[in-house]
Image 1: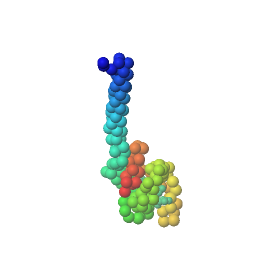
Image 2 (image 1 turned 90 degrees about the vertical axis):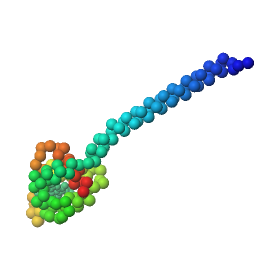
Image 3 (image 1 turned 120 degrees about the vertical axis):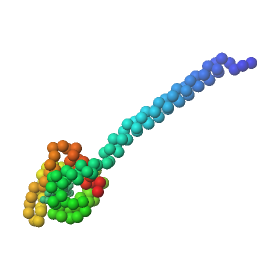
Length: 135
Ligand code: HEC
């Protein structure tokens, strides 16, 4: 006597369900992996500022007359600025605003208007900010 047909059918249904579950898991994993492959290079690109572009914009804009990477001049060093803002959620926004809104600053007790970078390209200013914050 073999198994009854009812048992055979329900065993087949269980197997089919298991198979569908497996296929779903495989598709889900593929989706996850392809998302990571697409998204990760963007994250990496943002984390790496273009040092040469940042430094040449700072030079061209005469930022270097008041700021150096690690020495105090009329303005604080970029490293001091970075240490003050680094790790704060709004660091990049704050520095971007500082560089684009011509705020008043004090140099030798005299009030002056802070210089803005000599470019119309926001991405270049953001790169300069990212570079300062990377120091
Ligand atoms: C005349 C001198 C002078 C020039 C030129 C100058 N800065 Fe500054 N900068 C200062 C001083 C002084 C401060 C400090 C202001 C303060 O903390 O109130 C400052 C502050 C900053 C800060 C920090 C702002 C903050 O919120 O902590 C950044 C970033 C900065 N400067 C970048 C630049 C860049 C980029 C340029 C060129 C486009 C530039 N500076 C040109 C004098 C100068």
